[in-house]
Amino acid sequence: MENEKSGEAKKKEEYAEGIIKTAVPSLFGVLAGVISFFVINNPSSEDGLLIAILLVLVQKFVYPFLNINMEGAKDWIYISFMTVFCWFVTFTLLLN
Image (cartoon, rainbow, N blue to C red; front, side, top):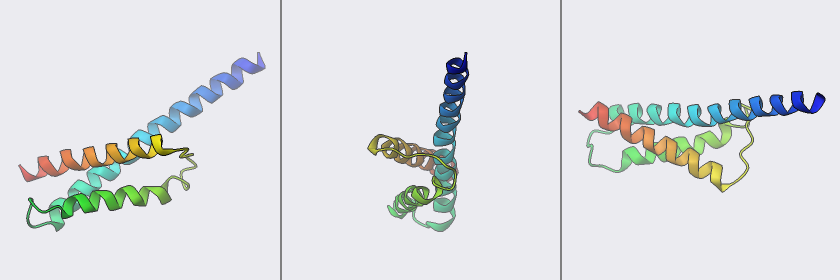
């Protein structure tokens, strides 16, 4: 009985951590898109991507405050992809 409760608690904890690992990069990507739209005058410039990359690096310092364990390269590749993807979508929608 005790193992079932601890197993369910662990599942819920992993689920919440997964939600946070998806929501935070998405929010940072949207923020990067908005900043790029207002700061970059020439949309063909690669400076907007630089803003997205900088916000990926900022996340390295955000996750310890959220008590999220970033274990390896797989997590960082996922976070980088989500941030850049959300930046691209937001920046493209704002340009139109």
